[in-house]
Amino acid sequence: MRTPFCGYLVFPRWAETGLGIVGHVETPILVRGRTEDEVVTHLTTMSLQSVRDRLHDAVRSAEEAPS
Image (cartoon, rainbow, N blue to C red; front, side, top):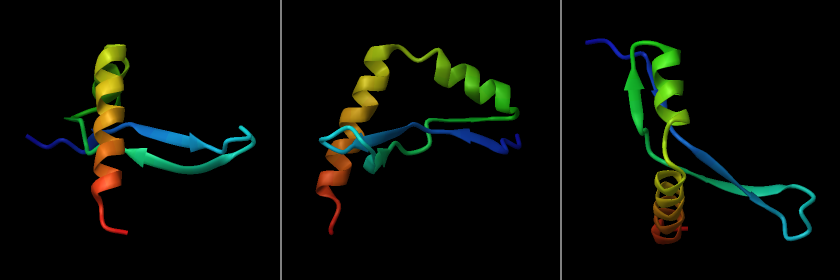
């Protein structure tokens, strides 16, 4: 099955002043689908707890990555 669309989450890191984005972390691909709507539907129906867990995993991976 061909799945030309994929979805992942990007979490911006804001400056302490709140005046701009100074970095980001992102998840690996979370879903693949045949249509954009299929992927968007999956991502937008994720629970807040699931999104939070993915954020924590992304931060942990970024901290473990070599500089």
